[in-house]
Image 1 (tube, helix red, strand yellow):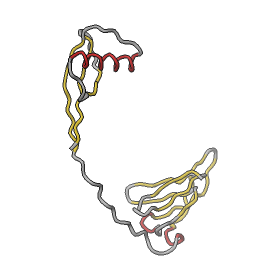
Image 2 (cartoon, rainbow, N blue to C red; image 1 turned 45 degrees about the vertical axis):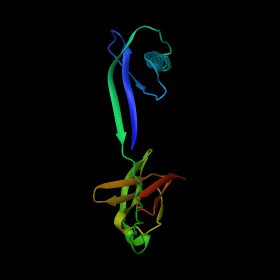
Image 3 (cartoon, rainbow, N blue to C red; image 1 turned 135 degrees about the vertical axis):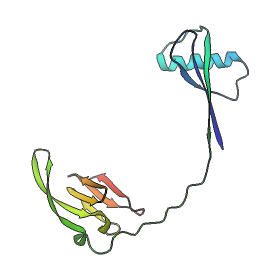
Image 4 (cartoon, rainbow, N blue to C red; image 1 turned 180 degrees about the vertical axis):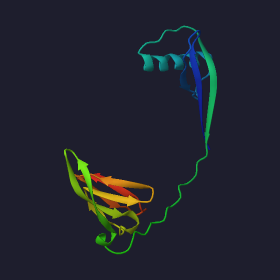
Length: 147
């Protein structure tokens, strides 16, 4: 487990608070006030040593677990041409371009597409614009990179 404690503090009479992290080394309320003044200085570029108040105490607890190993996802079988569904006109910059359309589930593992291209799947269509390339990663994700 990991814990993070914060104090929401403000100058007495103000309506807006600053969230100040709690430190183990604090030994007095003067340390708490000094942390508020430092946070105020950092946020607003000024601070005065006027009275402050604590509005709330927040404690966040995090359960730490090891990351699961995700299995590699097999891509579609066959060729890139077998994944091709056809062509659609897509508007880029100032003109339409006939753009190849591919079925996402049919893309072979380790596929690399150069834009422009469209990748269709049941819930979405991914546009690979000109100047980009798309690759099917080991986990089955589609990764776009600028060329």
